Image 1 (cartoon, rainbow, N blue to C red):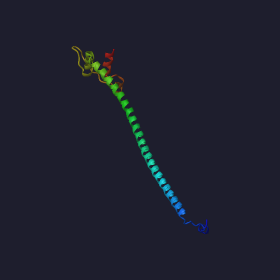
Image 2 (image 1 turned 120 degrees about the vertical axis):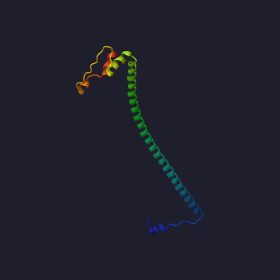
Image 3 (image 1 turned 30 degrees about the vertical axis):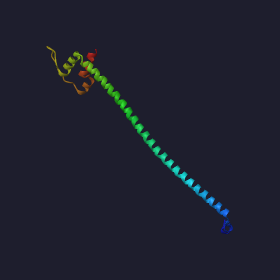
Image 4 (image 1 turned 30 degrees about the horizontal axis):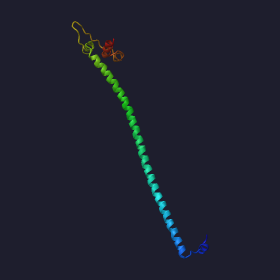
Length: 144
């Protein structure tokens, strides 16, 4: 529309027209107020959703760390249980007088009356790895 056409339109100055114009302005202000309120509510909802999402992400990360710690702890517990069972077996062996006597003879070179002990030098480190230790020899003898 050009300027000539807009100047041809005039408003009526009647009380009814003024009343209708005030009603229209009031409805327009109410609509703007509702839109602003809706926008504010939407902003609060989005902010709340973002905060909750970040917290959920952090909790998931923390949960995965705890699961990893749990797996490591279970593995460590299994190792400790194995060591405990080995130590319990050693305690049972140490209660046997024959085992203690053999252990004392092999480690500390104690002898019975009339026995002679000959200490032989090791032929090398590599061959000593292949041979069982004196503790292993004593344990295998008691197991038989």
